[in-house]
Image (cartoon, rainbow over all chains, first blue to last red; front, top):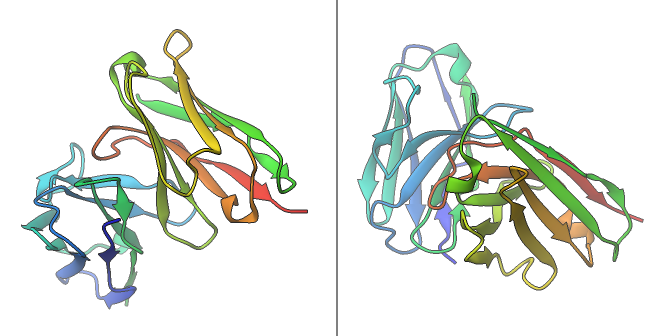
Amino acid sequence: DTVLTQSPALAVSPGERVTISCRASESVSTRMHWYQQKPGQQPKLLIYGASNLESGVPARFSGSGSGTDFTLTIDPVEANDTATYFCQQSWNDPTFGGGTKLELK
Amino acid sequence: EVQLVESGGGLVQPGSSLKLSCVASGFTFSNYGMNWIRQAPKKGLEWIALIYYDSSNKYYADSVKGRFTISRDNSKNTLYLEMNSLRSEDTAMYYCATGVYYFDYWGQGVMVTVSS
């Protein structure tokens, strides 16, 4: 299985720019996708194919990367972006990263 | 509006069986691959099964292979997950989700607790 590694937590102030990283244990090309999960809710797709913004998702969210290193950027961060963010690869059987919990200062 | 509504969860004993359902609306269900994805309490997400739009292909995570069966009834817009030989480590929120490579719509989830 392809293992995806994310840093567990980040804290930023509203209005700042935040980057959330995801590293794959092997190359997944651009088959990386990002989700946002707020407490008590189901995950929501933000980015697919490493850099494609899902319809209806604010342009404050963007994704980049290829191969093994990927980044989700939120710029600027807003108060309601408090959530856990997961990466997911589809190069082989889908696997998810452990999630990065984003907190606002 | 796309809606996915799961049902059938509950508290069961180890070794028992359970069948989950996911009723879809707001899109052409028969055109979409469908998945089951679970999340253990306070844990991350685990994909467990995929079924193609026409049931021609089914894929499973190793953790459930041989114990769980994914199926669908396109005439009823319904996805199923039959779970046998349940273990404590199967305790999780179970979500159904659309898509083959990534998961664009998710249900609200149904809780399955395996405990004696």
